Length: 117
Image (cartoon, rainbow, N blue to C red; front, side):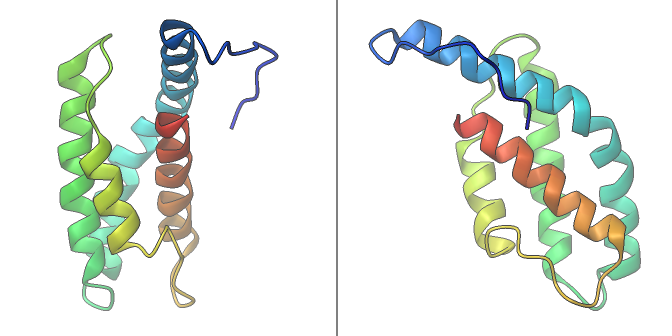
C-alpha cells in the first residue's frame, strides 16, 4: 500500500476520512480493473475445488457495484469486507492454487486495509 507523509489529526474526523478515502481510491484505482478480470476466471478455474470462491465472487460483485454507484462518495463496504474476511479466513491463500488466485486475495486484502484506514 502507498504510504503518505500526510499527518492525520485524529481530532479532525473530516481530515481522517479524507485521508482514508485518498488511500482507498489509490488502491481501488490500482486493483479494481484487474480484480474485475481475475475474479471470474479464478472462480471458473478453481471454483469446483474451492467452492468458497463462488462466495468471494458474489461478494466482490456486490462490492464492485457499490463502488461504481458511489462515484466520488465513500461507499459503505463494511459488510462486504467483513464477509470477505470471514469466507477467506482473512485472505489466507490455499496451498493448491495458482498465482492469479493468490493475486486476487492480495488485491482484496489491500483494498480492505485501505478502506479500514
